[in-house]
Length: 174
Image 1 (tube, rainbow, N blue to C red):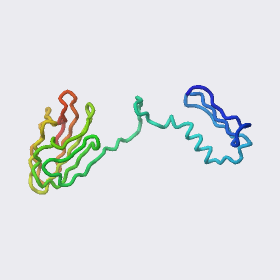
Image 2: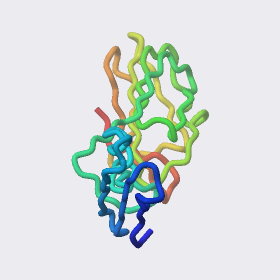
Image 3: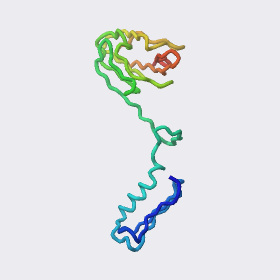
Image 4: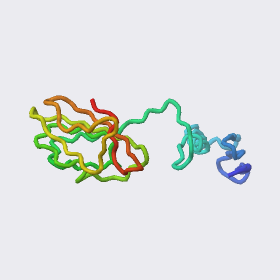
């Protein structure tokens, strides 16, 4: 809100005057009649007055500097033949102890991905190589979809959501 806002010390118990220019700047003045107002309360009021400078907006276009994005990882033990994965909840799914061939990665795949969202799938078998059938929600690019695990080794497969084909496009295998 634009404009100056103040509380008149003569009409309040606190004797606090807070002004805002509407541009994120302002000042808080503690008048002599506010001797009961603690420093903690002043800090709380100051923090509340400046919270707009500290919050990332839900729909605002903002540049975040020196911020770390922590991936949401699902540690999935012995997922079975049709792993259940919701891509709205996880960026990385690490499937370990595969004791069965995967007959479809698509059957229990849910979520509503946005254009070019990323997904990393990890596979580690239980000492026996396991086959992987991908299904319609996964596609190769210049990188082929792997069809089997490597015995007792972590197989990582990276994808981006392709909005044109509505499929997870394989972009890396390691």
